[in-house]
Image 1 (cartoon, rainbow, N blue to C red):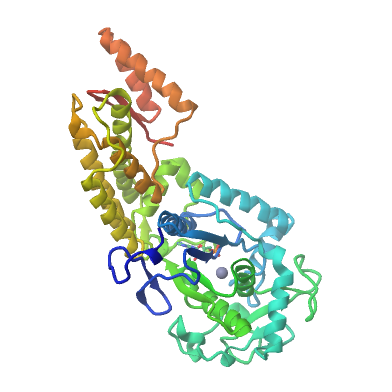
Image 2: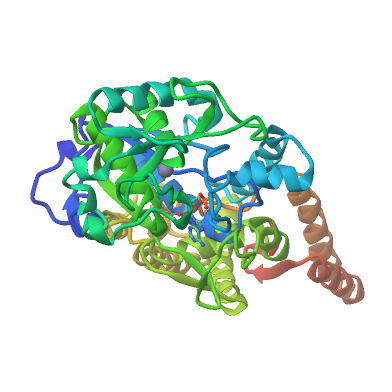
Length: 489
Ligand code: AMP
Ligand code: ZN
């Protein structure tokens, strides 16, 4: 059920989203009841995704999962920037992808393909669901040219020797999102063409000679699009002229999103975005993780070191608007909490598999439904994942308390309570351990150990236990059987 069907003014059941534009939490109301159109800025694919990227995309995934849980039909579009993102380390900006491709002596498209594959490998492992549509900028040059032409016709642009620029002085509310005056605002150092009218004007089209391998013909000569116009063209093509939610990192509040907004609204005359959401950085030693400075830990390294589920769990432990400083300690701490939840999941699963509960009732208990409401209240409060997690811990304790032998009528709701728990946990991308071939083999080993113990062959039982430990499998004997938790999965 969407919010539309719920009583208005009900603080707990109404989703509120912090809108960067107003700096306030606002009641969420999509343009079309029941449907949410969301666009999130994708990666510039010239390097491996790092944990900061994983964090941002994990945050958007949680937003989408929760909106779907609430019954909305969500259409999520997330692009790949495969051209037009200028470097900031040369006097005149140079396309980051073209530059890296030249260094690596490969075609830019080959470079991009490689890193898109890397992006999916990491994000799929982290259970970050793919957006419905994932357009590449290079596939939408025609749409960008059309958009620039429209802005030109409306008098928002001017041409110089280096490109076509958006004249910010023609868009009076330009500084509304960044809360900066136009005079205080400058595009990155790289866009300092002396013919520019104002430091805050930004490139829509960048002219380029034949040495620039990624270029296209346009009414303003050969060149390539500016980074900002890409997101406007791709989001409006697939989602229409007004988006419900637009997400990106907090680094986009100062320039990228004001630029997207200015050119989109100038072109259409309509509100571009209803709710602007910004995800806080992952830092390392208190400084932003960043590809360009080389100060980062790749998502792949983290997955190899801690296991994908632990990394993903770690990513949801902080609220999306709180900066997280990466350290081994906090991920290890998150890991222990994750294992506690896994312990409950395995324990209840095995209990239900081995025990017969008299008169099982398919509806969750009243207490479980209260916990569900608390979970929703946390998520309705601008997607407060740490609070929602604390409800899951409480729920986990409640389930564990019901695991007593022999089962009685007191546990009639256990199965339904457990199913509801799994549903809520899934909103936070926490799922039971995979049911795969490794699991089958581990089950055989655990059974063999139980048999050895029964036969008082402690030597063999201990050997199996030690072997499992070296394989990073924790086992725990419960009165209804032995459960195991894979530390690395
Ligand atoms: P980029 O590839 O740099 O264009 O970044 C793609 C997305 O990841 C953008 O929404 C950025 O804001 C976000 N991002 C980049 N670095 C970090 C970081 N250290 N922490 C969180 N998000 C980041
Ligand atoms: Zn963007």
